[in-house]
Image 1 (cartoon, rainbow, N blue to C red):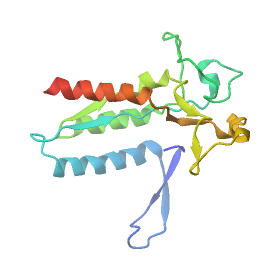
Image 2 (cartoon, one colour):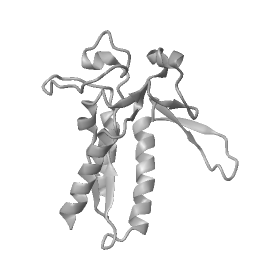
Image 3 (cartoon, rainbow, N blue to C red):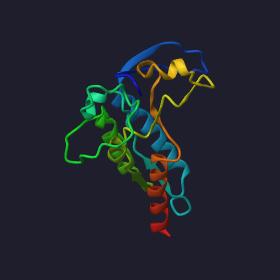
Length: 177
């Protein structure tokens, strides 16, 4: 979901169809989640299974989003965004967030929506940045010296923020028992 429009296959891979249509991300995401929701409603017994859904995690690609004009993406960031009253946007597509919230809320089977998005927006420092793997190999020193090209501001360091998400999940599970 990293482009404004998505190419969606008309037909089936199994039948060899090759024609695509371009649709907006929220429309594509809603189709995907409705398909998932149909599967959940047909296959999940809420008396025996609990369903959780985590909202999307943000990217930190433009350092101007957190008022760092000298920054290069998430590279060299060592602290979270600390000013919680500062209005900022890291490019999260809240239309997708709304789609996920609405679809999960509309299902007959209860789905516990774990909102990790806003919390994660503050953690510009938690990405793997230039300490990452590309095509199965660690970045070379030359690649690490070029964060504009090689900084990974999508994936997250472990241990770190994903552990916080797991704490939310754990708390939700325990609160139900």
